[in-house]
Length: 592
Image (cartoon, rainbow, N blue to C red; front, side, top):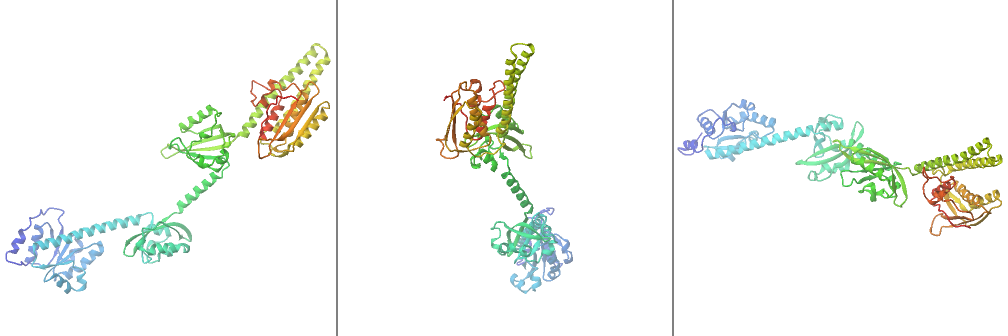
């Protein structure tokens, strides 16, 4: 090791404090120099200045872990092959400083091309301590950074290799690398994909947007996912493709198999379509939001309520309730919802047009993974007709039992009178005969009652004036002493066959309950309060005593109860027939 001036060697050895030789962080420097005093001095200097010097033969390089290699013009060729192999294996910078006399640039220029690629820099002799330390610090730092980059690259490579999404490196539109997931996606060995044009794995009708995506590295990462299809075992697979620029002309292409997601989306669309097209009302509410509002309603719910979904979404379904809704039913429903339990009730609701209907409501909680209720699923069915039929059958049952019991008590009482020899037999027989006729009439009324059960027959246009004229003529034939005066406008209404029975019942009731010569007036006209639609007003007045207070319930709009009975079912039949046709039966207190 040469000194530029006398005494420089001693100065070089003492211008920096020595470093503890046991420090594991000391950079290792391999000295592949010719043996001699200069090598000894350099090794001594390295040890004193924080480095770990190692004297090694060129053949030993590949077995060593070091930060820098020092060589001279006589040894550099022997270390060149080993350094190249290390660089290829580690994919890192392996610095080599050439210790030589002369200008560094001139020394590098004289080196053969194969050696110039191995030498990192030239240290001109005689060596100066400050220059040597600066050069060693620079190359060792570069070596450390290179290793960090290589380790980062290796971690990235392992991540890409183990990534669940297919990853490709594409340069000049050609695949240079494909990870294991790419091989699985395409059903082939990923190594077989190298060298293929990337768009060759894409369905022909999807290639143009994909070709543009991978052809422009500068735009990589800016575009959104591109939808496409690949071929796997001659079967199309839907995918999403995105790119990211790597370096130079290389683009990383990520390909996601979206077939499962699309299958789930298709399934959800099927569920949504099935719910939207269902013949029962379906709702979903979210109890995590204030007041548990509706977040979904289907088409049938709109039809049942007469309200648009935009009007209902975000609101609690209690707005459908009326002032007549049973509070006990509401309380039972609320208790179940607050407890996160299922509930089934029949509840009175009101439509947007003001009409009321009975809703058979089933509410089911939907639990999340943690067991908490996330949603409530509701099913609604209009059971108004069924409840109406049940109510009418209950009326029929009670009225029939009441009237049958009264008539049979009459029969039994007069039969007992005959048996006991009380009174005149003819009187008893006459009473029994009348009671039997009443029973027969009651049987006929019960038969007619069935036609008044809502839903048995669809409503259709009926020429009401013809129905009234036919009924009046028939009653006049049966009761020649009765006078029926008619004033009939030509009016068509929507009704069923029971309307004829109801008209006949009204006229018969007016005739048979009159204690003198019956005089009945019947008028039919269009409803002057309605501009459109087949509406009519039918009035029946007579010169009889009027309907008894106890029998007015049907036409007074009140309901028959188990403890209060109206005699006979004829007026109930009239009321229900009119209601089924969309009308109202009103008690007429006027006399002819």
